[in-house]
Length: 180
Length: 441
Image (cartoon, rainbow over all chains, first blue to last red; front, side, top):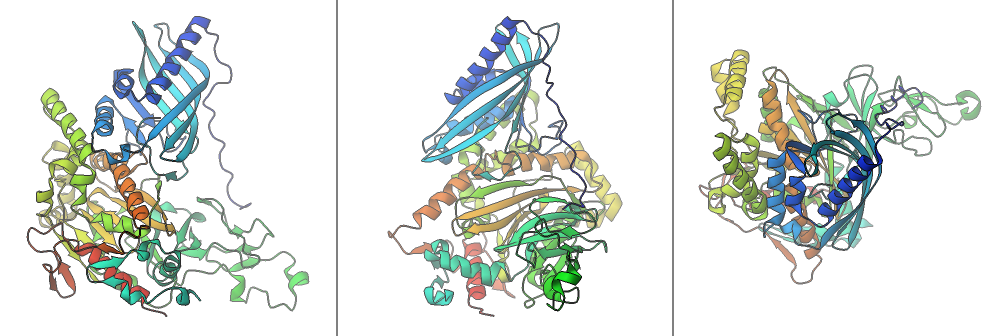
């Protein structure tokens, strides 16, 4: 396809040069992300929802070029109400797809603070790797997180969690039942 | 050869039951590809997926890798994705723009958008006297035997024989009329995203589920109940919950007995329609504004006709499940006897107000995306169904619900009053299947 137009390079969004941050802030953010992963892996769904601000959004775009979830096709674009539907669904005794043994294991790393506001709010980028077991089948998912965190009295709350799956454009073998 | 390995298929389909091997035997699957999917009209895509000259999408028809491309003549062509030289696929990506012509990445043979050979390197010196030249149709990318669009939806058939597209679609063409007529301009354009989900089950299991009006309140009650609880809670707090909650809660609030109140209509070639149930015509300001726009475009009478089209789902056998009031469709691509890909598209009503698009988009995201809270339980059932059918605990799949109570008028089988959960659609699909499979040429 030599005659075809060259594909534009993906827009670089991550700043290579992270701004200098207080090691205590870096530590606190990393602990927050580790705790989030632990909450997901231990299926504490309400605790996960509670990590979000009241106007918080969990968003997984199907395409890395998307800049907003608003009015766009999205794999996930959930406020706390929709997240509550999802939680109540998976906890329902007749959620058939939840019957088989399944579980996940998240590892989060490459945590970079991209932006720090004077009020303590943060924009944080990280990478994750998630293994999922369902019956005897293992699936691997990997990608990046973008967290807009609001400073709270007892740590942080998520204003926006953007999840870019590396395989966002690939076919899904089965589906994603809960947040990644 | 294939035929020898397959027993007499006419004994495999009875009016209300089907042998399990029809779903699990890989030889029967191969014969299905030959006699059904590679013969009948199969959906390729929408013209708006390839707006510019050279735009292409690759698509699988039966077992055949194909290319749908917009030519310089502005027509949409469907070609076999295979270089006539050594068999290399011409397009390796799912979509893109090929520019002025196709060029094989192996030995640089080039082709026009309609498949005609453009050039071969060393055509004079290397191929003199071989018969390989621009005059030889064997040197072209082979086009699909027949390609035809209906209201922007492109179909191809890999067989020269058989009914024309409109004859094949018959009454089921209402799927596309209903989608397009809901636009004040009478046209839709694709929302540029395709959700693709793989099912670990035979393709027919998916199609048989689509119009199974009994399963939602069983399979989807967890999501329906959860959505209903949150819907009520939001209503208490704010007075009104968005329609998207109703789209999910309807799966539970419409109980088994109520499902019998709907109707399925079953047509020749295996196509079927399930009548509507989601109450997609509320009286909120957005809907009223949309109705005003439609009335302006079509007049009051025609607007009423369009909006009262009573459809939830149209199944176009053997490969398309259309939810026209929500402008969504799922194309079925069988990948193997136990593996099926669904390609899920959403369309925007040209000229309709933004909130109407967003309302349907909510359904696309919640029900049809890879994080679906509905299909998660369907796919679980499909896998269990397919795996269960390997069992020697029984030989048949049964479709007897409300059997013998359907009425037939002019080749159309209608379920009787309060028999909406009739398994008539499955019986109808298998009737078409048996007819296709019995046709050797």
